[in-house]
Length: 432
Ligand code: PXL
Image 1 (cartoon, rainbow, N blue to C red):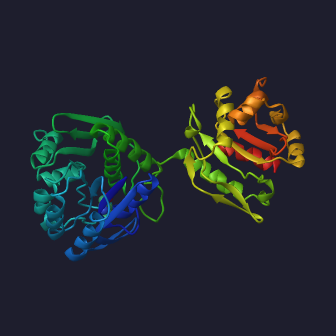
Image 2 (cartoon, protein in one colour):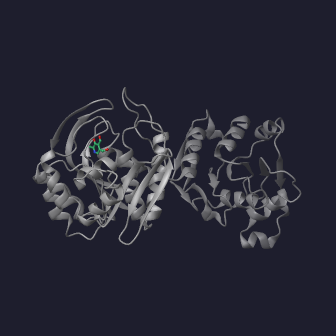
C-alpha cells in the first residue's frame, strides 16, 4: 500500500511528516512524503518556519506521482497561500482520496498556517477534502464561527461540509461525562463515537489520528470503521506517549504484526547465545510461531530461509513470512491440534549432551522412532505429522520437547515447543 503524506517537517519527530513516516513504517506501508515547510521545534518550544519554494514543491510532487500509484493522500501543514493554491491546482485533478488535517497551531503554540492564508485554506483545501479532520478549535477557525448554545458543533461541522468537504470529522469534543466525542458528518448520515477521556498531555495525537484514518481508508474500510480504528489506536498512542525530551511526551504507536515482532525479537536473542552455532543441525534451524487456531502452515510465521551456520556464527537467512517454514511449522501445527495453547517451536540439533540437560529439568518430553515409520507415510511425505502424532498420542500434557533419533539418511532432531516464542527461548536457554 502506498500512502502520500504532504506536510511540514517536525525535527523532533512528534508530529508532521516524521510522525507519519514512523507510523506508516510500523504498519508495513510505503510512506511517500512531500515537505511543504521546515519547522524548527522540539517538545517544549516552537522556533521558526521556512516554507519551501513552489519549484521544489512541484518537483517533489512530480517525482512521486510519476513513479508510484498512490492509494490515499494525507495533507497536514500547508502554511501559506502559494502552497495551498499550488496543491489545489495539482491535486484536484487526481482521483485519489484526500484526508485533510487542518492543522493551525502546534501543541507548543507555533502557527502552522499563516493568518493571511486562512481564507485560501477555506477556499481551496476544504473542497478537495474527501475527509477533513479538524478538532473543535480548528473547526471554529476554518468555519469562521464560534461554538455557542445556538451554534452547536454539529452546525459548524455541517457548515464545513457545505464549504465543500465531502465528509467532516470533528475530533476531541469534550462532553460533560468525561468522554471525548468525535462527530462524523458523512454525505447522508451523522453519528458520533466516544471514548473515555485520557488525562495525558501529548504531542502528535492529531497527526496520528488523521494518518490512521488514511491508512484505514486505503484498506477499503468504511469511514465509520476507520474512525473507530483511528480512535482506538490514537488512544493507545496517547497512553503510550513517551517523554523523549524535556517537554511534552510524544505519542507512540506500535501496530503491525505483533506475532512477527515477538518472533523477530526472540530470534535475535537466539542468534546471540554464545556458541549457538553448535546447536544448529545439518538441515539448519527454523523458529516459528502461530496465529490462534492455525488451519495450515500458512497461519504459521517462520523464516523463509533458515537460521544457518556460517563458521562459528549464525545468520538469519530470509524473511519472516507466513508459510515460511514447512517442517517445523508442520510439527507445530500437529502439536497445536491436540494442545491449542502451544503456538511456537524451534528445531535444534540432536545431541546426547542436550538430552542429558533436558532430563535434568522438569520438561514434558516425548519421542518417536522413525525406524518404525510406515512405508505409505514415507511415500506421502507426511513423516513429521505421523511422527509428532505418534509421540504425543498418549500425552496428557502439552510437550516441551519432542525428539527422534533419526533413521538411515534421516538426521535426528530435537524440537522445543512453547506457548509463544519467549517461552520457547526460556526453555532453549536451559538446555543449550
Ligand atoms: O500536529 C500538527 C502538526 C503538523 N505538522 C507539523 C507540526 C505539527 C505540530 O506541531 O509541527 C509540522
